[in-house]
Image 1 (cartoon, helix red, strand yellow):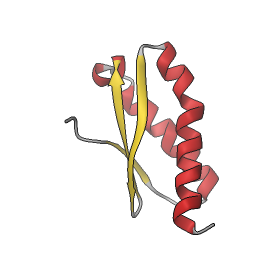
Image 2 (cartoon, rainbow, N blue to C red):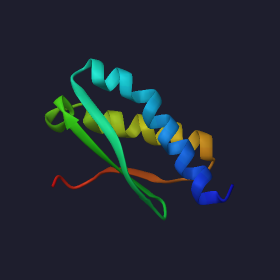
Image 3 (cartoon, rainbow, N blue to C red):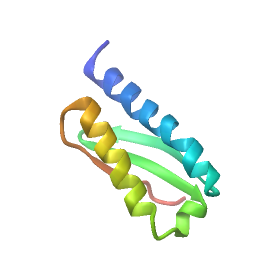
Image 4 (cartoon, one colour):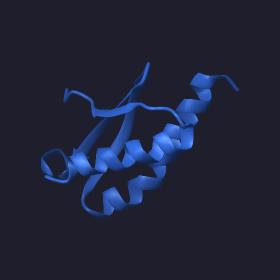
Length: 80
């Protein structure tokens, strides 16, 4: 497994682990892209206007960084 596929698998697993809690609050999250050290996710539903969305992204970032042992950023993808 190369670094990119390992990184993607870790990111996808962290997002899947977080989804039930996010969905319970009326929102959802999906992985959009990973480029260099930037992970882009799309928040939808109640998350789009939630004041805690930044904390959700920060929590995802901490979990991903802990598993990959390297710094990266988790940012919202532009809304289409």
